[in-house]
Image (tube, rainbow, N blue to C red):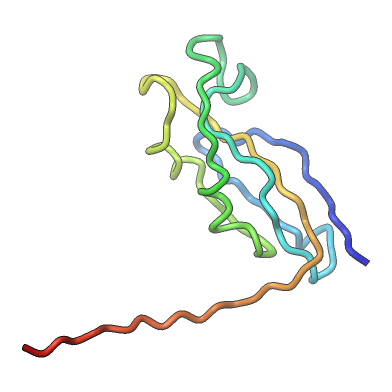
Length: 120
């Protein structure tokens, strides 16, 4: 039986950490699948006040997919996304993200780095 449990879209302020986990709500056979991740000034609320420069946004799903999707838990500093800042530089942005916990298996890949030597 396959089971998917979705998380709500949550705001994470610039000085906070995005913490996704399937450990506390699901058996060990569930992994994270990121469903949305946006960085910017989507709307006034918990992380920003006022309406100045609201509406600028960048999709950062790819940046959260790599460290989170396929794992049982991940932590990402919102501050690590600052280089992707889509808004006027003087304004603080925040992360808005959600994920699903999907029944699956965690596979660990082992990569080997090969060096090629050329003789002259």
